[in-house]
Amino acid sequence: MGDTSIKKERANLVKYSNRLNLNPLGSLSSNEQDVFINIMAIFHGQNARRVEIRLADLKDMAGMSGEKYSYFLQKLTGINEHLISNLVYTIETEKGLYTAPLFQSFLVTKDGRLIAELNELMASALFDIEGSFTRYKRLTFMKFRSKYTKSLFRLFAKNHKGHFQIGLTEFKEAMALPPKYSQSNLRKVIHASVAELEEKYYGKGTVTVTDHYGRTRGQPLESLEFTYPLMGREPDMRCDICPDGDGFPVKMVAREVAQEEQYLRSDGLPGLRRVTALRTEALRCPLCGAPVGEFLAEDGRRYEICKNNRLQRQFGGSGACTYFRWMPESETFPPFPDEKK
Image (cartoon, rainbow, N blue to C red; front, side):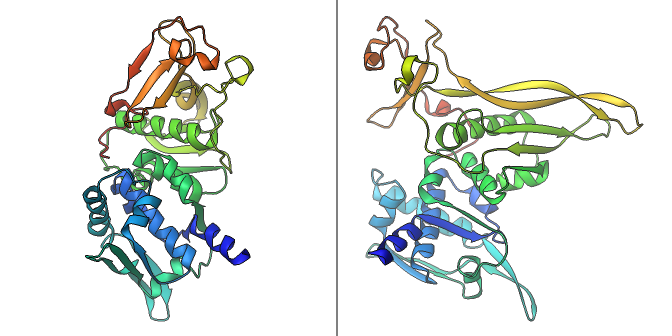
């Protein structure tokens, strides 16, 4: 009984050396990342270089049981095409530094199985880890809808200190963003990613982002500093702005808060510069000011609805408000620029 529970727990975990560069993972769609992370969890659970799994089982593990089989195969093909040549691991051997792909083979059989085998030397990235490593639950990773949120979550899990500062170029690489990605789109990505992390894992108001500007002409943005809880939690669905915490799932939105701070200029004189941070707050109804919730319909579409709508009377609302809105795909929590499913 004990061995079974240990194996089940291992199968729910993803663990790898921090020397394994997973930045290329960000180039995959959200669904493709979920499939890959579950493959990693299977390796960890079986503690074996070669694993074999039915595609139907992998499809269910990745939360894609409702998708067509052809669509799932498309995602699996995307993993094969994008990662086999890009996802590499570098280790030091007696002859020097050795760099090779993580996988030695990645075979999808005609009878519906995936057979994947790790490169022999690369297995140390998962099984014989020396030094720092990253670990998280696969189901936690799958909570997040956006590929950008997933990339930021991996950064938080890798820097397991509750805070870290990262250069702008390195951050774009970690998030799989183009080097010339506009600052306005970058802010949209950060705002939306932080909002989703807070709602689904860390808790509202627990993640902050601070800009750090250079001292050269124009004071360009040079780095970003993140603070966050060391441990996340299941989302707290109680409404802390509703009477008695009645369970209404309030939608949280991210807002940018600007302030000025003093710094020492290159000429030795004090100066002021603008610093921004992210804060989350409850979304209010545009008609009556009551809290607005976000729900998932049976057909997979999302919608916003006021707590005082008559359809939400089980949460103690007045039933007098008519606010209801289907959310377009581009706006589903909240908009991420240039992101495919």
